[in-house]
Structures are given as C-alpha cells and as structure tokens.
Amino acid sequence: MHINTSKEQEYYRIAIEGDLDASSSIQLDEAIAAARANGEHKIIVDCQELHYISSAGLGVFMSYIQDFQNDGCSMVLCHMSEKVKQVFAILGLDELIKIVPGIDEAKAVLA
Image (cartoon, rainbow, N blue to C red; front, side):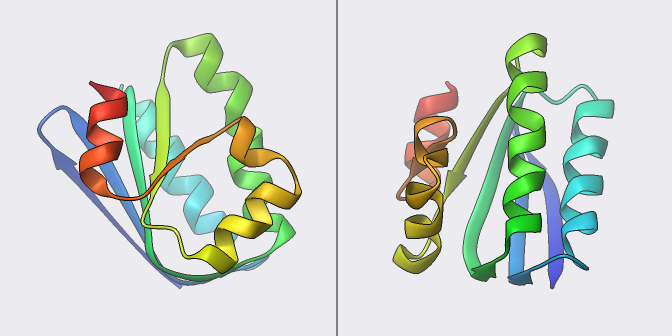
C-alpha cells in the first residue's frame, strides 16, 4: 500500500493506493494524524486506488469519527469502489462517514 498526501486549496487530500490491511493501516493512521497536527479541518480521502480494506483499516477511520466531531473537522471519502463501499455499508460506517462518488462532490460537501 502507498499513501500520497497533498494540500489542495483549503482541502487536504489523502490518496490510498493498494490494500489497506493490518500492517498498512498504520500508514493511514499516521497520515490522518499528521493532517490533524497541521491544523487541517477539511480532509478528502481519495479511495480510487483502494482495492481492499480490512477491519484494521476500518478501525482507523472509526477511531477518528469522535475526534473530528469534537474538533470541528470534516472528512469525506470519495472514488470508492462498490466492493469497498459495501464493507462500509455492512458495518453502518456509511452512516457515520460521508462517502461521495468523486472529488468534486467531496469538495462541495466540505465547502
């Protein structure tokens, strides 16, 4: 797995490539923690190249839900494959984390 991060206007983008499993979920956790430490409040997680997510990967997202609400931060996931999106839906995470089709919709939600 590989994670690319970039600052785009007022948005912080985290792009995930590959499989997000127990060993690689640490990288995602570090990327989100770094964004928060830098004072980023509008985070877009681009899942276009995310092929698989394990319970450990889901746990990373779950661990930030309350923190984001408390800090006034927003995180939106986009470009998610149907297979990965279904995993979020089965666990009800699609009710707690905003998932949109593309980057433009993510920016609109965060605007």
